Length: 515
Image (tube, rainbow, N blue to C red; front, side):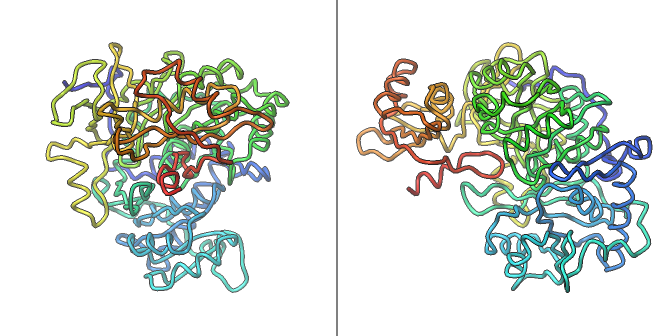
């Protein structure tokens, strides 16, 4: 059974670059703030953003950068991020976005794999950058903020601006190479074209609806596909003012919400958890908030409802992955269902299949397959991984277990490879984690499978308690025992100071297993 979107189809852009698409309202909104640096208040209007992009593109072109070349961008969320991202794209090149908290070795791997020749960063990460480029094709490091003896952003602004997109094949040529999280192996470059990116923003037209006065908080990193597309490109393309934060700090985020009258707060479940439970929230005016949108990891229905009740705004979520540019499902505000990741976005097909590839009926749990214009071109220089992910009919095999209900709402159950097999029964860690978070003493939780001679695997929980809270392992295990089937019982429990997570909010289960 093929599930299609209940939303109207949209006209998919073709032949337009992601930069031209993102700046489609820039002239009309030339004097409106486009990106505000949250900590400092430094503001860049849509007109200034467009001008900066064209100048940087001109500076890159003057250096010989163009089609076939790759620029690596390793920086936090600051206004200049968009300028370099789109400057490289306008010049016809490719951008690979790098997590600025990476070690030098991790950066080196991405530089070599992507073939980058220029690395743009900030002074804070200059030492790592210098170490990382050794043995790569990078011939120049540039910092956004000036450093003596190093190329800076201002050196790119002295050449004539490039005011038109350098011609490229928008269908196949990679405009960006984000790298998968690497939580299950060496990270891989995801090849996304201009058409992939523009299509997906347009596909979200009926689920991410913005007004002329909306202001969005951009905490989620622009180097990650969620921050890059849903926030940076998607918001700018719709004329929304973005307030950036270089890293998440709850008090600073709440201050920005209050001062800038933020209406859209994009988050991951750990941030929603803080908004739902932290006492600091009560000290700030959050009445401007209309929507909290959670993504990157499953948000339990209980936690979503708790945050919604406390803040008095819609708390919704979506589903996607880097390989999908990234959105395939999202909740329509006012039509949410607890625990659901929403409905299929426009122009997208889905299947739910069993291990043999047979389609499953409504409410049947199986692997989610997706087909649509947002599906990646493939993994860079990795035909084997590409063919294992996208089949001959164009279906992308997500590796996620899900089901649709009668109304076409999707529920993500868990990752296939993260399912715990207890005596032949499948135990979804996300389900247990959602229940654990409802315990009054629990601040955060993660569940993994531990090898066991008798059962195959047994569920083990890692728990972080709230400050000042007390609870025993037996008490928490008893709390879960009353809510799930016997095979889902937590057999082991360990208290730890913090649950390890990636920058996008995903639990790093590999680190927990390595313990």
